[in-house]
Length: 128
Image 1 (cartoon, one colour):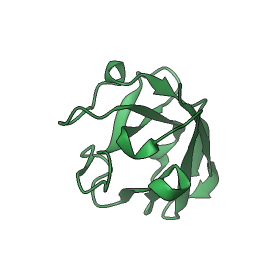
Image 2: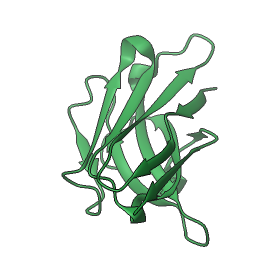
Image 3: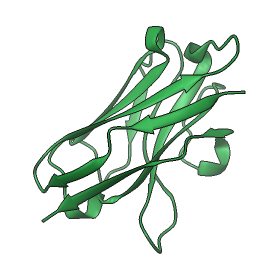
């Protein structure tokens, strides 16, 4: 079992930056073997993929077109954490942000149904 907790959300002005953290915990957890994704959900909308990173070194990072060039996903396995650096924020980035994890099996995972473990979410609000 993997327990995920997101933090770092808040209110920010358009053009500003926020850094989200996804901290993982669990008995005998080896977080390095997990593929991690960030998703977001705005009121009345479906949950959508934002960014993903593969296991171990995390050299495979991929992004939704809407955030490419502005957001960066990274991981620190020693701290059992994955980060989402969000720059040049726009009002349309406002949403609840969730991190999710699954044992890595290669490939890319953009579908929320691919993930087994989820955090409770952190709210990001961007004022224009």
